[in-house]
Picture 1 (cartoon, one colour):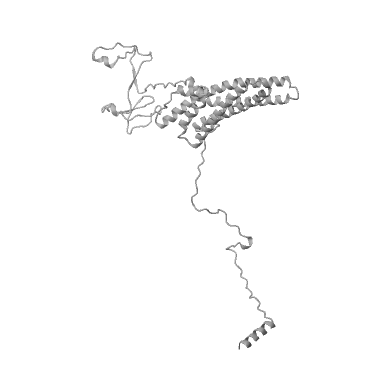
Picture 2 (spheres, helix red, strand yellow):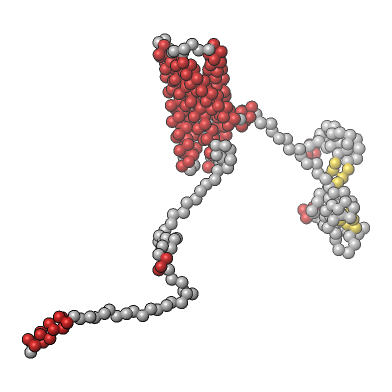
Length: 358
């Protein structure tokens, strides 16, 4: 049998006539290097391998293991039909792991932070409108419809905004776990803090005023000044927001009419600071991902310090009369000598001086 080439697509054997071919004449598939049956190639030097494909009847039944020395090789496969031999391997189906609930929640952390900022901004606006109604009510009666709408806006934002903020805090904590794992992996080590401790440090009241800033500072030391400045700004706003929440809760315990009115203003300020905290937290997460606040890739500007001599790029300004054109001929004008007119009196004085000296 002459030498032949095997097609990797249709597995057809084509005899070699003259020069070896590269493409299969039947299916235009790639042809392997020629195989000579008279000169078999060792398996280590072959560019293909034969694979036993089981029959289509199904998976082979379990075989009884052999006794003796063959037991270490495992059970012998048995088929109802003769297995086919070919060049096509069955590729293992790569199963994509479904993301866990924690990973899904970490992915939507930016969305929850945006929703938190919007809800607290609406809460601040509702409190400001309520304070305006209080000022209006000092001299006139308030329309019941307007009062009902104001109460609904204030009540709904005071309930929904904290719940969304709590979900955003948990999601941001889970996102912080992933960011820390990525940063420590880039350093060639693993995160020394367990993920559960990080999430609990972000959720437990009063404790979360300090620990999240510590967690962020640990991974922001190697980053640029922009990220460190963003972390410090967020930390200051975060602590300020926590202090305002405590002050607002204590202020609402007062029963005086003016104290209640001042509590409305304090609630509006607290909600506004909470909205700023959410925006600052979103900015920090975006910077860790290498994007700006809107999720676009960051653009860095490189400034070069000039070390050469300073020079003026603009030529000095000269009057129009002094401009010189090299193509225009130069006209030279004769210069008249100054007139030396002597009066008769000066000549007589010189003559008199000559006589005296003689």
